[in-house]
Image (cartoon, rainbow, N blue to C red; front, side):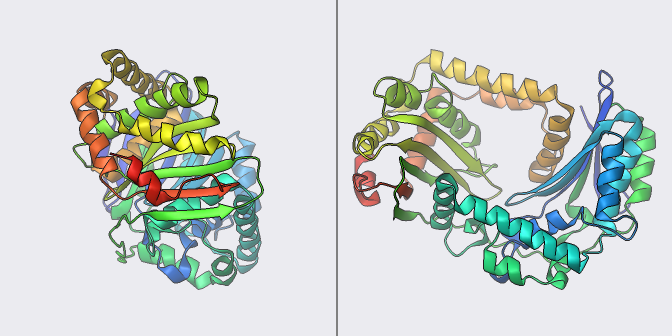
Length: 417
């Protein structure tokens, strides 16, 4: 099991020693994300993440890239609704460099105005790229409907208008306002000397921001409908409901239900809708789970004629009492989770990320055995409780393409028991 260390500066360090590898993955995970943004600076968390590698008091952007890649290290970052992360992987002999670079970008970034203008252009290209993709449009509109007028429903990328206008001071201000060692977990996985790492991390992170801004509005799922008629070869649609949060008693049951229903080629949705009827190329069900909310959804891409048949068949599948599922289906689904968890244990970068994320969201590192035990305990009656809770909520339906044969959300909801 990983070891957890509380450092003098308030930060948490997780060390996960693995002696069968020659590499080390490290990174800082922050319990700060897009849901902490006020409306007028939507996109700032993601812009800040982009700016982190764009120069510090000690290194230029080019020097950061050169130093990291000279020894074969890889580095990256991401922004989600609730977490922002900066991480790096490389050979075990280069772990000090990895820690030094991450400490540098989180404490001494200069937010150079010229680099900021360049990065605005990069993000505007990213926004433009997603605006050209029907799947992305449907997903963004789905979030807006599920969580209207809330940070949870806004694009993580922000809008082009806001990205063009966000000032350097607002980017730096977001870091100084929200970044705080008490919200941070530094995670290390791989082959390393633990005492050396503890001392190094203690020494390197002495100048972190101590922001006390706790703006984090509670999520409130609403639902609704978005339809866009557009000349495409397919109708792209997301049909969804309120799910559960990560602390819910139905969290594991909801994950198992979603996987059994629509994950993989032997799932019910794939077999009934694609294999038996040929109505789609792609269909699956999934969920997003947050600290105080969740979403369950089904994605499908289908033809303008086929969508007329697709909706009734999909609703029929959602209406099936989960108590009638077979034990074989349940066993197969549980096995799928076990394989995924144990494969993740064989990846140093996955362990590094999952240890940190688990601690930030649950205040502990969940072991693979604990997760597998929770999945194993799920029974068919639990799946039925999850299914009923999902269908009792408001419907969210987002679609784009040749949608003249797509029923209105109100009619779709009537099909669901």
